[in-house]
Image 1 (cartoon, rainbow, N blue to C red):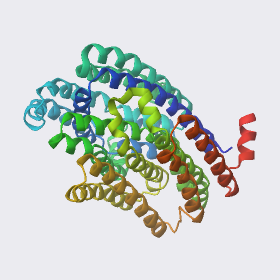
Image 2: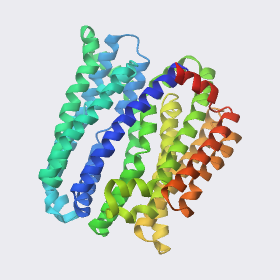
Image 3: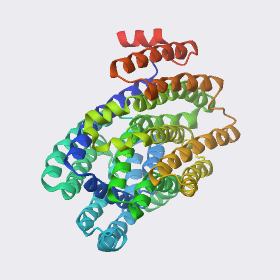
Length: 481
């Protein structure tokens, strides 16, 4: 097994360990809060995310790429200091703006005065969060993956310990008190993990070095920042729009559906932690080797993500009813389009970290994310005109936006790098894997449904092996080691 594949597996295990704890936390929170209270959490989270994205600047990915290409640990710390300085020049005014505007947003825009305190807490969170992504970039850029993955697994337990009691006693306010305390712990933990190993090389950049680093990081980061803004607008479009003219119950239902569907992103997020530094280094050293490495890796990731997504759809009723009962049973009709929306975005996310950022294809990256948002917004209003319900229109719109974004990237990369990221076997794999979901719609009874699922899974595994995407024999040998 290649070094890339090994670290990707460890990253996925780490993320899924955190995901299991996160799911338990989500179940506890949704059981404690009413649907309306969960709607308030969704609104505050969406507004906070919009302010938060303004301080993102794409510095995390830009910093990771520059650190991956740096020559020594002194350069690493100089890049870190320069990135932090840039970050807080932007972060502090934005956090202050959210703090000041909290009463207006609460009372006049959303007409719920009870979210003033949560919004002001979120402004503090923005300040605390500001440095976390840069610490993370130092760890990832130096490819110290082991400590990063252990941190991701352990910090989720801290989150559970904080959220459960605070939400129980203080409801919506408790949720955001826990968020604040969690970020304090996270920031101090990441600071130790990132800086302690290079403590003997903590040398500040000179004025000239700062300007050079500023320019190199910022050019790439602004492009990443632009697409991060577009992604956040796409991701929060549902809550923000529905929250303006629908009831809190509708917002709560949609927020829960997004929460369930977006858990799929744990896979692609885990992979980007490894792919960005590894592919950035490979692209600068060996372009043909870079293309070969991507193909060998993406074939497997395509199957893994699609299979996970279709399994998530297949068992959605069982999982949701077991986790939260019938409280959110009205989400079932919108689960399929939302899970598929995050499936296509997962592919976009992997391509961004593996190809677009390493090759600095800023224009293509920006165009694909513009398509993501514009298609979703336009589709929502068109579907609403066609008399679809607002919640169905929104879920279908997010799916159409992510699908078209992925398709556009395929053609732009093929033209720009003369590199075909998909071939005929992807069509065969897609058809084969999609068959798994058919019994979901017409087979009742858990045992019978599970039997169908098991049979289809074995058939798909056989097809994957015959297409030489994943070798079952090699996989068994690796598991025996």
